[in-house]
Image 1 (tube, rainbow, N blue to C red):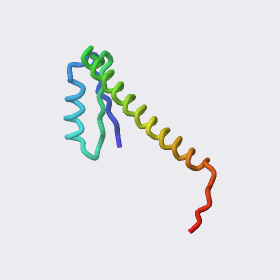
Image 2 (cartoon, rainbow, N blue to C red; image 1 turned 90 degrees about the vertical axis):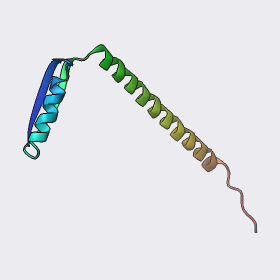
Image 3 (cartoon, rainbow, N blue to C red; image 1 turned 135 degrees about the vertical axis):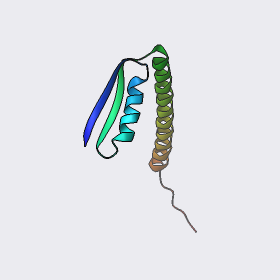
Image 4 (spheres, rainbow, N blue to C red; image 1 turned 135 degrees about the horizontal axis):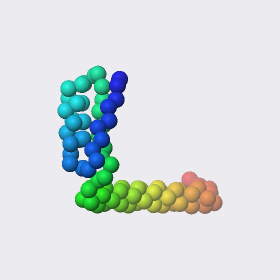
Length: 85
């Protein structure tokens, strides 16, 4: 499948519109992507916020996994006590 890249110098949504139209018209023949070389300040701010949220979520998940591992290792490392019925 052929690939096409639409590049926009400033983010005026031209490349995104071209990508959407192309992908609708070329289904199964080719695939388009779009990008801009100078994103607007709003895009940079939004992207920064999204990255920050993703990193915070990832760190939260890692901390939860580490807590579970720590608790599991403490249980596994405790001496086994015989159970008498």
